[in-house]
Structure formats: C-alpha cells, structure tokens
Amino acid sequence: MNLIGHRHIWKFLVKSSRAGKISHAYLFSGPNKVGKKTLALEFIKFLNCQESDIDKRPCQKCYCCREIAKKTFPDLIFIEPQKKEIRISQIRELGWKLSLEPYSSVFKSAIIDDAHLMNKEAQSALLKTLEEPQGRAVIILVTSLPELLLPTIVSRTERIRFSFVSREEIQRYLEKRGLSSDLRERILSFSFGRPGEVIDYLNYPEKLKVIDQKIKDLEKLINSSLGERFRYAKEEGKELTRLMETLDIWLRYFRGKLRSSLKTSPKRASLAKYKKLINLIQDIELLLLRTEVNKILALETLLLEL
Ligand SMILES: [Zn+2]
Image (cartoon, rainbow, N blue to C red):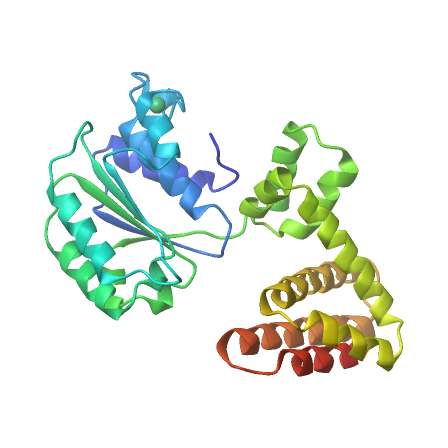
C-alpha cells in the first residue's frame, strides 16, 4: 500500500468497515503532508476494490483501484480549492452528485481536500448535506486547520487525528527503496515526520539540491558582515514565494540544529539561540502570510539575529 505510517488509523477504518460501521462523514485532521489525503484515497480504494480476498484490498490493480488513484472514478467526487477557496457551487454539486445512485459501486465517496478553505457559504451548504441522510455515501474532509470549520460541521463528523510519522517508520521506508545512507539521512532530516515530503524528494531530487544551496548560503550569512546581510535581504526579499521557501528551509535547519544540540552538547546559550531563531522565523512567516509587511525589512530583522 502507498502508506507510510498511520497503521493504527488504517486498522481502525478497516475494522469499522468489516463490522459495517462506517461513518457517513469523517474529518481527517493533522499537520500538512503527513498522509491524510493518501490514506483517504486508500480507504476509498479499499471500500470499492474488486479483489475477492478482503485481506488483499486495496489491490491497486483492479479498475476501481486504478481509477480512484487517478481521481477519475465515477463514484468518487474529489473537491479541492480553486484559487485558494472552495465555493458554494462546488459543494452544491457535491450534494447533487451524492443524491444520485452510484454508477458502478456500492458506495458514493467524496473527499474534500483542504476543507478549511471552504468559504462561509460553502460550509453552510455542506452542513445541509451532512444533515440529510445520503444513503450509502462516505464523505471525508481533509484539513490541517480544523479550527476554521464550523463547530456544527465538526460535530457531525467522526474525527480522525493524524500526527507526524516516526523517524523509524520513514527510515524503514527509505531503506526498502535502497537509497544510500547519506541520501536517506538528508531526506530524514528534512522531512520531519511528513511522508508527503519524503515522496516529493524522491520524485524531485533537484529539490534537495536547492535545499543544499540555501543552507550553504545561510551558513555563509551567519559569518558575514552586516553589509552582506542587507544585500542578501534585498535580493531574497523580492518575491514572497521564494522568501517563504527560504524561511521554511531555515526553519528546518535550525530545528535540526536544536535537536542535535539537545542530544549531544546541551549548551544553554546555543539552545536558547536556536529556539529564539525558530520562534522569530515562525513569527515572520505568519506576518508575511497575513499582512502586507515589508518583505525585505522582515528578512533584515531576522538576519540581524543570526
Ligand atoms: Zn482493487
């Protein structure tokens, strides 16, 4: 199966299904890129798979498994944000499609990815859908920010909480792929319990090169003059997406440093410094996302603390 970690959740869902106790709506909540959507798709495959031996479901080979993987299965409705928002028209269409008889399977299934991006109207429309009995249908809401959903939506779903996947489990997966220990270590230190990121690195190894370069730049900056830092801020602070990517890499770098200094030489001064930098980067990321703060100035503030 395409799953790294979350075995207990999988077992729970399979058991509920075998006992005929599937909920009409689930809320898969937890950090980004830990595997919520992957597990949702695997579960829908499991429910629809044509393999006769239940223990071998999902087989990944039958028509249903293949079409669900491509999200082209006629009895799966997959909803995701369009331009950072899920609109009422998408939810109305969902309600309408769920009310039809299934084409080929026993179940109608729906996944709402990034469900917290439903706007107010969309959430109210979804609430109506959840209130009406849908026959044999399963709706899975996937979100990293469940607190942005109406409490009435949350209370009508069965909450399944995802957390980070252990280092050991990711390590096992990487070992099976036969990667060199050096590459394994780099992927492990940068994925921080998020299998989705592991898959990204495996699919796009050039991402690792970008990270290596940014870390080299950062280590140079730590030993550079103020003038050089300001020049860097002027260049790197030009564009938001690029800046956010850089900050994200720095955040991971300092978290890694914090973790290894906790293990090896717990010097108070360096621990405090890493913690301070981590908090500062997180604050700046939030400011950049939510306000019109000057990007170059924000980066300069951080560079002065390095
Ligand atoms: Zn199958």
